[in-house]
Image (cartoon, rainbow, N blue to C red; front, side, top):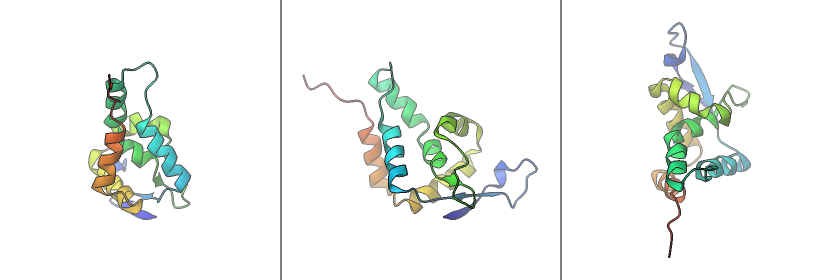
Length: 123
C-alpha cells in the first residue's frame, strides 16, 4: 500500500490530505480487467469501447484507492463521477501509484486497451 498526497481533494486546501492506493488481490484484478474489457449492453462495439476507455484511469483508481485499512473508498458504480469530478492531477498521481503497485507496465496497459477494442468481422 502506498500513501498518495491529494491536497487538491481537500475542501480547505489542506496540504496534508492523502489517500492510500493498494495492490489488488488476484480476484480483484480479474474483476477489474473484465470490467474494462466487457461489452456494453445494447451499445455498438465502438460505443462500448469509448465508454470503457473514457474512464480507464478512474476505473483503476476506484479499484485501488482505499483507507489505511485497505477498504476501498470508491465503488465501480462511482467511476464516472470520479472521472468527471475529481481533480485530474491528484487522480493521475493515484493512477501512477496503482500501475506501479500492481505491476502494470505500458505494454500490459496497451494490451488491455487492445483487448477491449471491438471485434472485427472476419467475413
